[in-house]
Length: 115
Length: 111
Image (tube, rainbow over all chains, first blue to last red; front, side, top):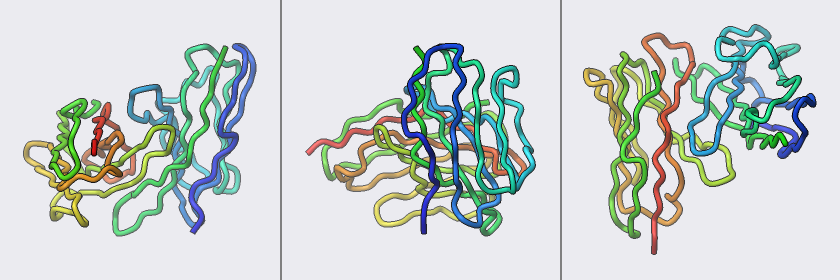
């Protein structure tokens, strides 16, 4: 079974430039998450989707971040414009509701460096 | 509230045991444990549910004390491959899938 796929793996941009990250979840997983992980910290949830619906985006900085999950499968996270403080690893995870739990499986992440 | 993990770091020799703790100030529905190696994605280890049993496979097991809102991860007879950073993720009183992760515990196993 294929895991969560993310691209690109690395991205270096100058501040004020836009950037987008793409995620393809595990087949059949209805729930998709975007996390940001700063160096030496645990992942921090940005947004959670149930199918096409964003059910929790309370942690998403909406002035510069946006996300979409068209057709309830792939998802894109965008930052426009990027700031120096956005440098981090952006992780995508997916889960299915198996046995009443949400076991989350993570992709390899996109390491963003803003210069 | 972010759960608190302890210790922050631990160094072991192969074959030694370790315990990593995760504490929350809020009532929990579940605790999820992950291991992350440098530059890689977090890998799911196990989940413990409120009212559930202690979980484990091979030499890694975990417990969940609902009354104390605490979970512990037990690593027995550690191997070099156990090295990495361990995170607990906690879900609140409702089963929504939303996790809040601790700051991590770095484990280094030496030969």
